[in-house]
Length: 263
Image 1 (cartoon, rainbow, N blue to C red):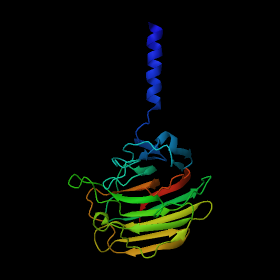
Image 2 (cartoon, rainbow, N blue to C red):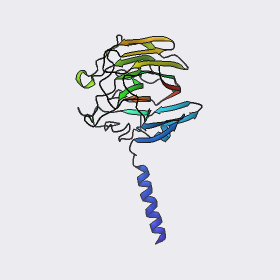
Image 3 (tube, rainbow, N blue to C red):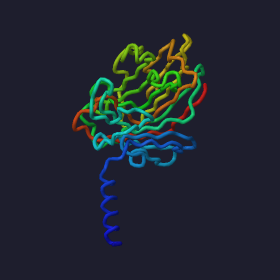
Image 4 (spheres, helix red, strand yellow):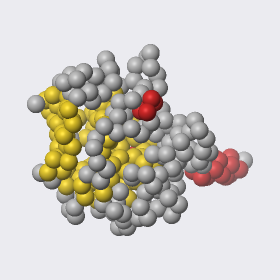
């Protein structure tokens, strides 16, 4: 009888192991002296790795996507059932600081980034992979939020770097207040990004992005919608809305020297 129970338990355990886990969200993810939230459409333990000495590594898994709510509530993460309401395949491996930043304050975000993927891939549809974004915190009166206001995007195949400034995402879709399209090219090895900004719904806002010492964005004016609860910054890899082509390989990115400070 004991043997039968043992065998039954082993079979049940095996069945659970074969079921895909939901996408992973880990709160209180401690890294480099700060508290983050880590999220992945695979598993955080597998795709977000503290390499020590202020270095963190993100694996963007383009296959074996595990459906769930990775990213803190996005039901479209890895949703294979594309509809108008669900924009389709979404892949992520990211961290964000738990504590939000305050609007109407001069801030500088800086980090170093390098692509150490074994394969540059097929080239993404649309504008590629988000590697950094600013996202106002949602409020109880606006549970869906109004979307992120800024991204830096990167396509590993072309090495092109894009950016946007859009605080009316649900009103004008993909409108972008940054002139130009391809703003720069990612170089081999480490790339340094510096983002200086005042996130505000007032006219005195600004957004300045420097890549490897060269200014690629210099925008003045409104930079966000009003967000009393502040905004958060995300680092890592995020691919939206069926941008990923079938057969796209996995990618691996590293960040270091992530600094956020008032200026």
